[in-house]
Every structure is written in C-alpha cells, then in structure tokens.
Image (cartoon, rainbow, N blue to C red):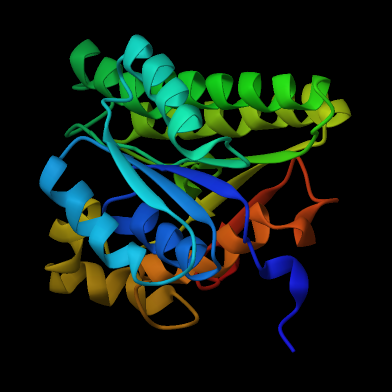
Length: 261
C-alpha cells in the first residue's frame, strides 16, 4: 500500500522553469503523484512539450504559462491566472534561474551582476511573495497550509570563484526562505531551499563536454556520476506533500555527497 501522504491528489504545484532541467524533473514527479501542475517558462514550444508529457503521468491537470520571471507584473498576472485556472496554489517551486559568470571577479561587470539578480533573486522574490500572499489569504479564510521552495545551489555555501554574482543570488534565496519560514509558519506555510550539486542540465552543458572537468570534479562525487533532473523528483513530492508538514527553514543538499568529500 502506497504511503498516503505522497499522493498529491487535489493539490496544485507551481514550478517556474518547469519546462526543462531540474524544474521538469520535479514537475514529472509531482504530476505522477497526481498533483495538478502549473508550469511557468519563457519558451512556448518547451512549455507545450512539457504539458503533453506530464498530462499522461497522473490524474491532475497540467497547464503552462509563458512567464518571464524578471518581470514583476508578469508574475503578479501569472499567479492570478494560475489560481483562476487551477483553483489554488498549494506549493510553489521557485526554480527558474540563470548562471552568468566572468573571467574573474575583477572583470565582472555590472550587467553580469544584474542579469543574475533579475532572474535568480528578484524573480524568486516576486514568485514566492505572490504565492505566499495567496496561501495566507486561503489560511485567513479557514484553509491553511502550503509549501514554498527555492532552488538554490552549492555555490551559496561554497566558494564560487568567477561566479560571485550567481552565488550571491543563491545565498540570498536561502536567507529569504528562512525568513519566510519564520514569519508565515502561523499560516501553515513551510519554506525550504534545495541545493543542487553538479547536475546535467543545459546550464552545465559546457562542463559536461570537458574531459578535464569529468576528471577533476565529477570524479570527486562519491556517487561517481552527474546528477540528473529526475534526482529531484522525490524531494519535490516530499516537500509538496503532508509528509513534510514539520520541515521548514532547512537547506536540503542534493549533490551525490560532493560537498562532504
């Protein structure tokens, strides 16, 4: 018999950047666990492909919206449309992200800094804020409970040379979620961060093709392989489910043991 809390029937999960990479891996598991899933992504073709794939996995409804998370008003509008279309938001996964580095910290320009901030921190802030508003309104109406999750990075807690802008956004995201966890617990909201290690996605394509990276870095991962987007499915289901009702304010590392070796 399946452990009942992992059945997400009746719950609605929002995943930004849910049409590829880690976001799609999480969305697959959420849909397969019978959640209704809202996907926000910038590319219509990828959105539609994700909807077609996920719709065949469970009993929930799967829909997608074209959303640029660096646009505050777009997020406000998309949140309202998601709630209107699917009835509610129970869990929000602020996953959309970019990674722009520089040859060195000294060479990092303001444009690089701001491009990282616009998506990874500003976009996550607006996404989480609007979902929290909705959940708090539900709670005040007698329907409490929800889960908000930010996809951060090991770069937030390790030295990320030439990627200080990216690392700063991810460290800020962790701090934001801890503050949300404390402030909104009274409404039944849990807030947690996921910290991926080296994951095979479009963002790491260049590193995946470099033999020296495989030799010098991936060989240090105790599990001895790149992570995959599907490695995040189980954690997404857990955090969206009633099984995580007492887990809040934590940072959950998924890195194959890399950070402890």
